Length: 268
Image 1: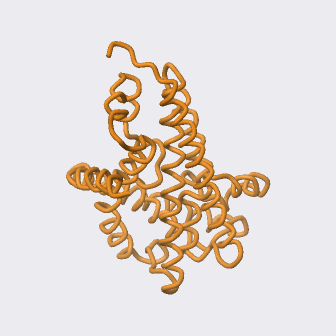
Image 2 (image 1 turned 180 degrees about the horizontal axis):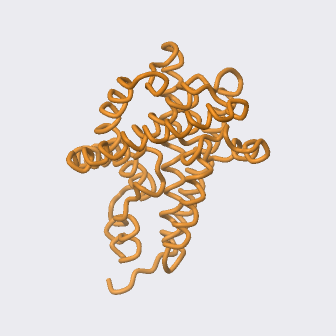
């Protein structure tokens, strides 16, 4: 376990060096989040009966999405080095290490995402908390809600990374993973609630999406924080997060181990 923690630390500290890129992202995300809040506020004013969430919960959801964008984005935070390593054959060097490739890459990718979020979430949420009501980002209702929020955040990051690992592993089995990557990541952006929160989807679609692994990414922790997801529904969502994390991580390790046994690297 110590070696994987070391991989995590090295990539985490490396990710903290991109401060200027983070500043640029913050400058973009603040007005974007404000525009989203204004759009939903207008929608509520026009048709309040069709609004399935309290607006304060929607505002919290939007600002958390902007603050933790790099944690849950499956298309905007891809580690291209992993794809290049597989496609160019440099993965041979990884095979020489006395470690599990899957666990090592899982640790690295998690570190990249956490480092990016560590740099930007406080400025975004601090700025959003200064806005006038109802656009303001509000604190959680109590300490218990905050604790469950942190737990579901960690589970959500695990589910996101486990899914991304499956996308990376497809590079072992295809000539080019670009098509699969673009298709899956575009679909997941919608199904995870990144474009619109899942409660705004039609009931038929929502009832299906809530059982899929993608709902366990940003949808669950953000709705827990805002108080929109409570009681047994909250515990059911947490159970699904744990289930899908285990299933996707197990599938990823099996596929990765199978690829390692059948791998042929030319020229070396």
